[in-house]
Structures are given as C-alpha cells and as structure tokens.
Length: 240
Image (cartoon, rainbow, N blue to C red; front, side, top):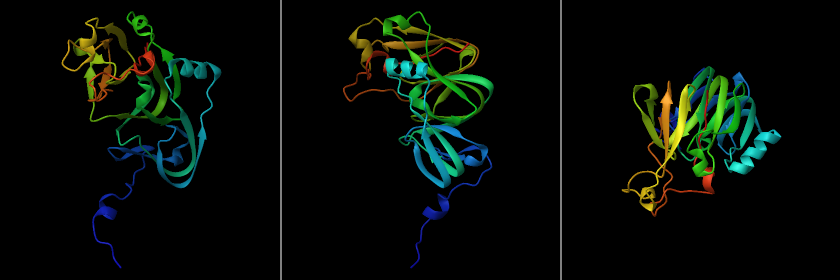
C-alpha cells in the first residue's frame, strides 16, 4: 500500500540550526542542543528525542503577585536533547532576540524564552492605573530568544514618530525606552460597546521604541469587552 499526497512532503519538519525557529506561522520549533528553555505550561504539542518538563517554581514574591493579580503566567522548564514543538491555540508565533535588552509583555502572549532571560511580574506605575485597580505585565530582560503569540498578524508601531495609543486588550508588548500611561474613557457603558464613543481603557505610549499590537480584542458575543476580575484582563508594565 502507498499513500499519495503532499502532506508528508509539504509539512515535513524544517531543518535549521537556529535555537528558535518557525515550523510554520503557528508553531515554534526549539532546538534543545542550545540549552534549557522556559515555556508556557501546556504549550508542548510534540517533541523528538529526550525532552523533560518541570513546572517552574516561583519565588515567594512572584507567587504573591501572581495570586493577587490573577495574571496566571505558569511556566515550565524544558531540558534535554532533541526538537521541541510549542504552540498556543493556533495563535501566530513571533520570534525575537534580545541582546542585553528588555521588553514588557502581556502575560497571555508569552510562549517561550531562553533560560538566560530573566522574567518577573510587575505592576505599572501610571496616573490612570489607580482607576482600574492596577495593571500588571511580564518583564523579560537579558540576552536570549523570546517567542510570543499574537492573534493574527501584528503591527509594530514606532512610538517616536507620533503619539500612539492602544486598546489594553490588543497591546501585546512594548520595548525598553517606551513609557506607558493609562487613559480611562468616562463615556459610560457606550464606551464598552463596539460603535460607541471609544474604548473604556486606553494605553498611551511615548518615548523611543516600538509597541506591538495584535488585530484582536477580548470581546464576548454580546459585544462587551471581556473583563475578568478587574485588573487580571488589563495588563500593563513599565520598563525604564
């Protein structure tokens, strides 16, 4: 018996020497020869070789912040030899390399990063944050690879070129050198409905660097932006 079709040729594993690479737009391939990586718990879809997974044990401070914010970034340490494939609900995967640099990322968009990258959950210090009950993000800092997910193809906006604003549900990350503040629309319930006066919560960016925004928001079938437990669905951060 012989199987005919392009499935086993068009979608074969891609050969590459890069530690992080795209198997396709929605799947990350990690070459474990380059050392341990941190990955979102539950993101493993396949691996070849001898790869082991250990739930990341957080320090007391990080555990406390995660419990208070509901931010819910649970990571696992991946170690061993072979090829590891990661994905998150068929979202698009974006890869970047930090060289002694830092980014602030919405926790829902973190997929994986090199073990050399330091990470933490931190609270934003912004004028409008008190009106929302606090905003939180994940900071990634150091040298190494980072993979994030986006719902659709994102846009990277140059903050220095023009005043830049983003919906809190659509902002994925921003780079070091970008300052963020919060604007709360007081237009009432109409601001929470598509076609109303605007978004309830807006992030205002300034400084030097980029803001990455995805073409998707957390919106329920009824048309209201999804709010879960106050600050847990509205994440922010500040990198100096």
